[in-house]
Image (cartoon, rainbow, N blue to C red; front, top):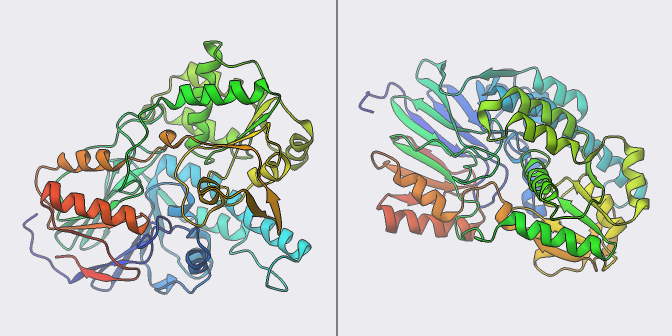
Length: 460
């Protein structure tokens, strides 16, 4: 912490500033450039349009990328970055690397499918809609990954060392620590909860000069009500009237948590023996990643096996379409968790108009997404170019979130042995980020601020 800096260093916020998505942080050390996270922007169109803009720094000029975890708002822009000229290594944990091998091709497939639907239905403003990237771009990005172990020190440049620290949240998720020109810069990534049913708690905060923290739930506390009990109530109530429970769940992390709760409820005979479907091409691959990394989560092998014996895994398009003709009672778990794309939209279009059914949201809903609109009271959603009425019951299981809430974040920061010289509050909507900033300043006495999009600050 007392080394003399050898080169001027700056940090630039290329994403996750003024929004909860698009995590991208650029560290410049002399003529070296290290990108921490390379995510997609999601939510409001004005935010999503940033995905189509030229990357703020030439991709070929970036020396290395570090990915905190596999969720697309942290990794989903990598195929475009590689296509446009990035040729360095992408560093991540082994589990994150394996999940990205599943998720990035799936993302490319969904983008290609969305472009085809838009062209066929003529609901795009573009005469020939193009996906943000294609499958070959995703496969090329995967080839650039270099997995490293937690706590391993990797030298990225003369003045830059990297260490990944467990973050909880999802399998493989890491806090990112850089030694930049003699200074310690710590990125939370997405920080998990101390009491998550699936994942281990995040590692404590070590001494750092600069802290870049997420603030997804920076202005709220999780509902203390047991999400397993609430989920059981919903399943009994909806299937009891012959309805369909459509659970919107993020493909990695939340789907497993939902399955864990449903399995425990079924084992205790607290929900009826109705069919459960996981409609995700990724599900089979993801369970194998959990099996390969047993020390990174709380599940025992037998419980993991029981979880995946409960549902029928739907992988083909034809089987997915058949679900929309089947009717209730049944439970469908499908991505995406914010209703921003994926197969869940087809189920929403098929079952959302029937009041016997229910749509269950299981985590954070970014502003501008269909999930956020439903929570705000919208009862018509635009899906595939048409307005779909939503008369189904809408249930928000926010307490199932895998993010630390505001109190969790403050308690985690208190674990630091000393105060950082600078704290930057990112990865949150404006109200969340500013509320957490105020708490950090007031309760911890640390200098904290919310950076602006594309702002550059010195690392000193």
